[in-house]
Image 1 (cartoon, helix red, strand yellow):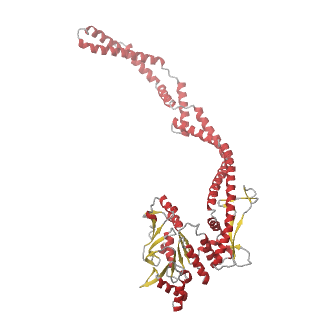
Image 2 (tube, helix red, strand yellow):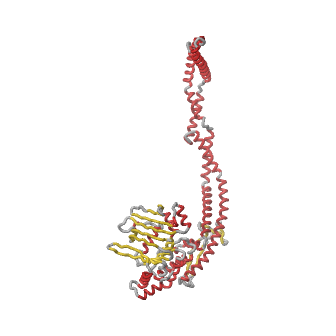
Image 3 (cartoon, helix red, strand yellow):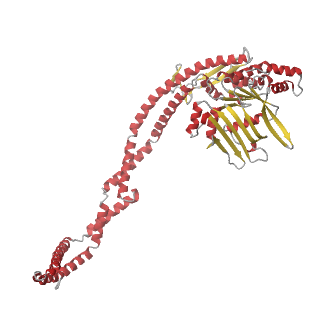
Length: 565
């Protein structure tokens, strides 16, 4: 329930704080006093559109706050999903609008988006403004009302889920079939790319190896010259290194036994001699094998050019080229499997069509049964509202579809996301007249009462805890007004109900009565609201009945109108 609302600098409201009670809360007051402004502020609090024109003249910011006591676990769960805790089931909602466009929304001091606030607000309050009964003029909402009454919403949700999956399968299949030529072209291109890479027979080590060989071949003359010069210095020329070192060994060897300190230099000289001999042998061997081959150099140049060409197409190095080749192969395999995918999709569609068809028939039967009960319930409620002789009905239309896969009542039909065909409420205001579309023949007063009748019978199914009726008494009066009041009071037994009314018969049914008043102080207008005690209620009802001139008779009548809880 809505426990409290606070409004600051909104329209002609400067600063207002109101505490509300359970049951039927009635708001009355003269035209222009600000009753609808309070509803507008509440609508803003619930995520409605923000308009800076609503900010009180001379101010830069307007603020609306509301405190709700919540017992519905699903609503509390919505807050938990966005990381907001509600201690003792209390929601403190705050909405601020500003001329500087710094509009902000808060839930229990946590900032939230307007869309999140609207989602939560729709679950908190069912608000019917002065013209909301006009929604009955739109047949597209009739199916929602019927599903709510007939408890077919779960069937619809289940059907819609399967139907959506069916559509996805069909769209996927159509996409595969439409892109068949493109797929074949892609397969051919991928095959060419894979063949080009495979023909090159690449390896990760080859490039570095042949680059080294190329470098060696290009400098082979320098290498040979260095080898020959080195061999000459080591052993071939007179006074070569090895010859000189051999003479050193010859001089030192006889003296090792005489001077032990010469043993180490001798051994190191001997080791150096043997090492240089091996070096000389290695240089000579390498010189014999060295062979400059211009044809091999050209072959290497061609191979490197081939690798560089592949790099330009497929990657910065051989590893990337080979990785790209694997990627092409994977895509080719996937494309090659499309034919099998098409067959599987076709089979899945047939299977899903069976499921969708069964659910569609089940939903249609449930709605047909619900329509009969809804007809009886609405007619009963309307009769109690002194609309005797009226008839109400639900017209189902099932356009045929010879190519459809759903068969209902021996006719093939095309399903939509919400079921089979469409429906519309019918109405006959007078005995002997045929049922016709509600939207075409019902008057404003009749629509108001039909909406109230629907809300009365949907009361148990509707989980929204707060209901607001802004001037639901449009076009009615007298005994009908008393019945409207009875209906509102009945709904208020299970919900908190707010009603703005000009009729004393309805105001007399209130559990709590508030009067909205407008005051002019200096050059400024302010709107306020206060809860009335019993005597103030009597006076207000008398004013509503007879105008500003209140008589004893009108006061007596007002006392009779006030219904105890």
